[in-house]
Length: 552
Image 1 (spheres, rainbow, N blue to C red):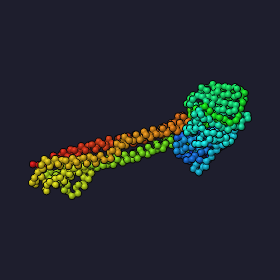
Image 2: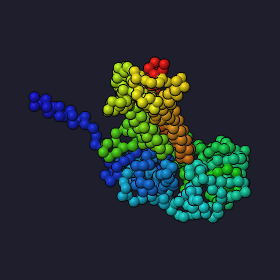
Image 3: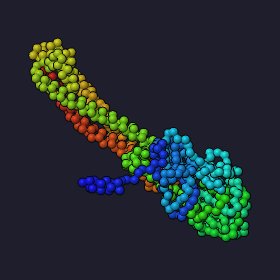
Image 4: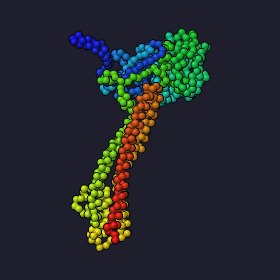
């Protein structure tokens, strides 16, 4: 037995789950970021991570994003990063991270959930020392260099609020943007995202190198020599354009080599962008080194249709990194308008349940009280007001609408006769008096019907209004989800699905209010209809007895 126990312990230890690594216990949550690149290995590549309501829970992070940390896949080294935009209200963020080594598949961790954390944003450390980076995120003034050298633009152009990522530079054919020179001695690189409105204009101009858009093709010139790209650009579409100069000038369109010009000179002097060009530019990078083809391919893969970045499920320190449940994903992806719609529907459901419960209790009491009253009523002979005359007997019929209708007839008889016993009558009811009493009974009947139907309108509101409120929340949620995805430029199933599922939760909530309300309404309406029919019959029976006993 001891040998078996030792063997069992050995097997359990051999197959035990690996320990759950966690970079810092001060952070409560993280998301795995997987970078998938079809290019070869790239060193120190700036990668854009787009966060939105479909892939990140902004409510779990600080309002200003100060608790964000990017850590290597082995949970050991912090990575340099730059937050280009953080908008917790609209649930949208753009984060550039410097990846020391980007291979075919690279894992990172985005940590958040530390209320006491100070911001660790390091724009100058995110980009290499040889580069000037222009995000065009400034609301006004000349575009600024986010890199280490502070090579801010020497002129300004029109700003586009929602461009490739956050803000961009707009050109109308009469504007141009001047950038200061970079100190290039051995190589040169230029990278930009462009969206041309017309397929002409100067994209890049330095003292001895230029890039001109002619009929959709990019024509590069160095001195007297030139080369045109083999790939054309489309109007109204975002394209990545880059070129490098070292032993030769190489032009890249959407990450692929599209032309080569041997023996080109290095660009020198200031750089002018956009002369005669109509369209948008964003994410300009000018470097004093010649980037390789893999680096250009990685930059081009960061477009809205690229698959470079994949966000994993949220993990918590307590949960040991397990996957979130479907319900948890939906709740975390709900937008503010979705919560408002669900909150209103929750209030409507509580009201509907209260109406259904209270009306059911009331109708049960009415039925029992009516039965007791009819037993007494059928015992009457010559004096139809006997029940009313009995001390305290009316309290037994507190919930009976039949008794209240009967009480009206008793009052009418008391007004007309000193002695309501039909055996001692000195006069009788005329047809006009019977009609008057009938009118009073009909008025009382209408009041009792209104009493029976009181609050039923709240159920009809829940039935008809609930689904529409839910649908409104769904439509608003879908609109916000697509707007956030469009602004972030991250279009994939993983980004869209959680937001759409959360938006549909509002419709589910609306149906959850309407369906039980509909069942309850139909049940109560049928019972009320039966009670009202009984009241109509009672009025006819009472008038007949009045005519029989008090008319001669």
